[in-house]
Image 1 (cartoon, rainbow, N blue to C red):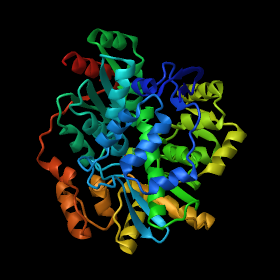
Image 2: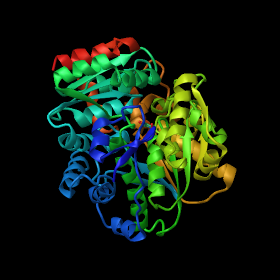
Image 3: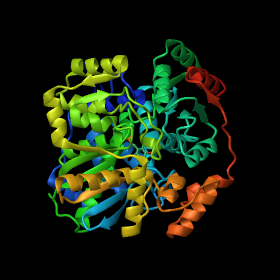
Image 4: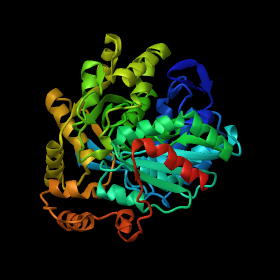
Length: 498
Ligand SMILES: *Cc1c(COP(=O)(O)O)cnc(C)c1O
């Protein structure tokens, strides 16, 4: 199977090329030419398989230019209990009958980004051998917090790669900052940017297409790639866990095969929920995809009105990994919903970068309305949802999952829908300890991050995950901070010194 660019149908590349390159040259995203199908029998056979075996079966459909051995090397390397605290890789908790929390944060950085970023270095180095032999891959990442750390853990000391991460100086939690600035490894670089996540992301995009930087890179024998969810190698692993969760629920007898489920996803860049859309289009029995946003509710408005308008106030919230006004992966959805109309996509996204706004056709809006429900909530409502889940079900969730849970409750109240539902839980609560502790009634005034999480542990009887506890004693290695305009120099200085 080949991959097309969303903005130019004449471009068609193998999966290895799509993954190695990250973004198409004219700025489009790579999408599969057709969405492969999963039969009932195939889903049933997954029930008896392990997570890496399930991942193998699904990747085979997307990575047709990889050999079986190559795919096995990737899935077995990434999804083992060496990297994850559970051999199931992701866990399912039961909040109440018919409401399942899909915990995607059992990896080394305690956020769902690990599900993709543990395997991306494998996918990328195998791809690079096929299509850009000999060149070192320089990974650039813009992060709203969790991607950066997960990418650093995935790529640290991987031969033939280096990684530079930019994060918004005041846009991440204390724990997220600490996790990144204490990162170990000989091929890693971390720098703060005076701006928000969109500044970081636009800065990275500008470096990718900067001719001067590119020619410097050629001289160094390196090539750029991306670990952001614009890369197909980031997105495809996320399809796996929705299908895997369904298989697990069939196996445990919680659902019958064929029974539809809702999937609720706390969303920023539209990556994680897009993976759920692919799972549905592959044939997974899904009813509604429920898109949950925080106060940065550009997606809620888009899904409800068909107008995408980023010209609005930017909020810094307690769910910082969703503080995003440009949801890149929406471009892939619109590609599929327009039947691959590259000119239309190029026009809309041209308007987005020029005016910050575009409006889809009534047909596309109607299709979106059939597939999705969208809702949002502010910080106070998020904290209220965390408290309610803890008080009623003794389940402690993080702030992003709190947004999803609140929006799901609103959805149920608005629709009366009693379909069984999977809520994607995207981070361990201790990653956002301050807000979570406040949500369950704790006082944080004047306390440092580590005191807070110890108090959270005492109050809730839950446990600080080992990787987060370990950051306490680690040395801070990266203290740099630049304006957006200084980002290219940070990259070139680092790569030049390698
Ligand atoms: C990245 C992230 C999200 C948002 O995921 P998208 O793919 O950008 O929609 C939600 N929650 C957490 C904890 C994250 O790290």
